[in-house]
Image (cartoon, rainbow, N blue to C red; front, side):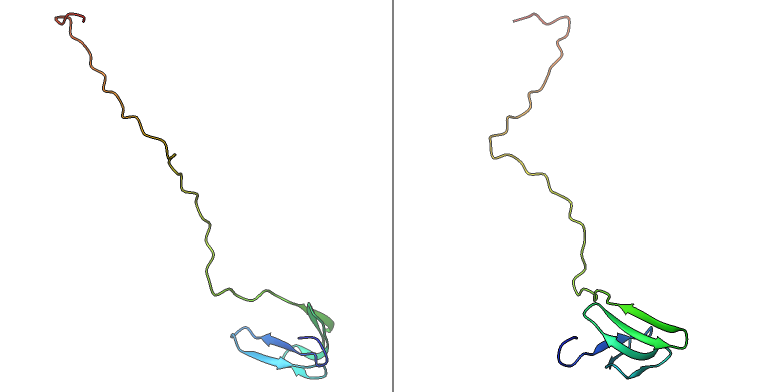
Length: 92
């Protein structure tokens, strides 16, 4: 969240989340230096680095939809049956 009071919510690998403001220490990461709309900058023992904003999980699973063929509204002509004539039958 950025505005008059900037803060970031960081979720750890166990799924726990915590709110941090600039100047606070994030365990195992370092001190929060700045919070921007798309990232949080920290300073740790390895130097300065940024955590980029990740999209949140969705509550509704998304699935690909397969189009369903539709029938035309016109009348359907029934199929004609074909009959093979035997040699003993006469032609009409």
